[in-house]
Image (cartoon, rainbow, N blue to C red; front, side, top):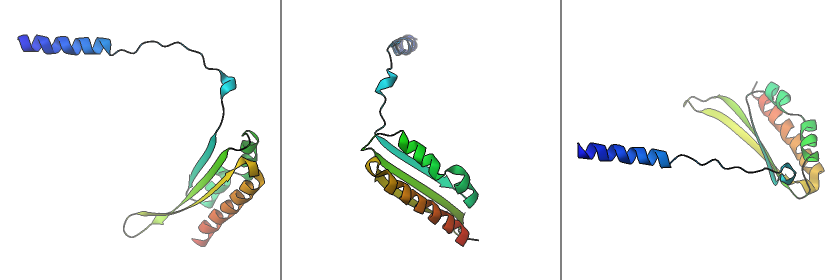
Length: 123
């Protein structure tokens, strides 16, 4: 009985002291800074590629970033199931920097076209 009371007392005291304290503070929105932009998209068809993103979406995103920020865009194209039960896939990735936005957009355009060709070749 003594052990039971001791265990209950320990559990009760641990749960009381484990409660989090309310911390009050302020978040200053003007201090928000984007340092790295990484976008990963997983698609199953050409229709998903066309509806998921356009080059205009990337232009808007790049307009909101500052100079010198690292950029990464990756698209994973899912294929059909293989005989061994695993799903086939292929991925493309483009890395760049906001210092050269035009080059990054050109590479994203090429990547988008390559992903569309991947699905068109599977038909």
